[in-house]
Image 1 (cartoon, rainbow, N blue to C red):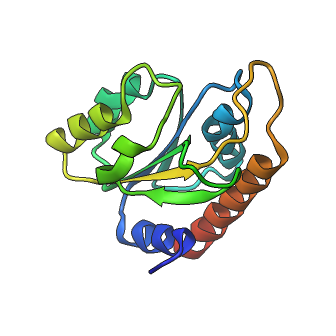
Image 2: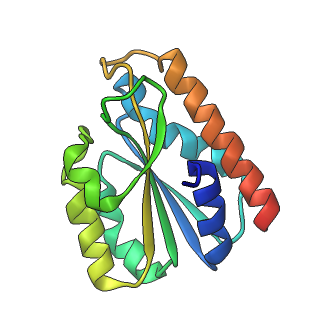
Length: 162
């Protein structure tokens, strides 16, 4: 079984146009990890990869995603996976029913199904197990370490494939 890093590298290499969507509430500690990662990747300005901070409303970007027709969409979000805080996993879209994504207006399953019914694309979800989602608190140490690992991995992938 491939690591999440290798799976992402393989998928990005196959893609001619990719979008990375950071999802979460940056006012609720670890739940804001998706937007945090997007904000840190913005400085890289990777060609053929669009970065979107969707905050708590990824559904607001459905029309844009369909119109831009990317071959790969990566969703990054805090996910309650009954794992150690800071655990990073690629979550198969068929198994997200058993994983909680708490800060969304609509379920991710709806978001994914709508896009997949409209365009041909690969959608992967990169989940990070949060420690806390308390209001107005900083990221926990394990989630901050996980975020840096994701940022480093994506930076390396961008440099290798672009």
